[in-house]
Length: 64
Image 1 (cartoon, one colour):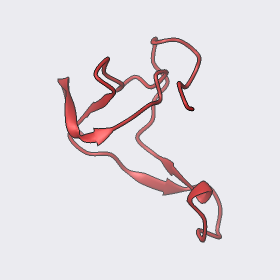
Image 2 (tube, one colour; image 1 turned 60 degrees about the horizontal axis):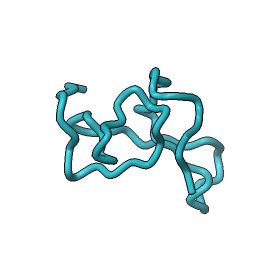
Image 3 (cartoon, one colour; image 1 turned 180 degrees about the vertical axis):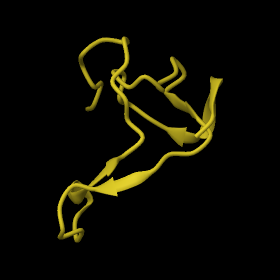
Image 4 (tube, helix red, strand yellow; image 1 turned 135 degrees about the horizontal axis):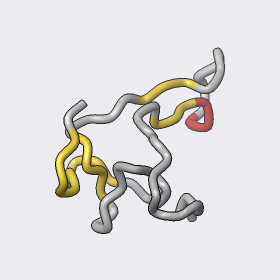
């Protein structure tokens, strides 16, 4: 995945602790990968952003 320095307006993100999080609330990746956290993917909670990498933006995710 290519990373740019500007936020990608197509990918909104509220996880401040991600290395790809821009101050605009957008992701700086061109694309993201979505993965599953368990075998039963019948709920949203069973998925995750598999592109997430912990960055130096702080330790809180910023989730509401």
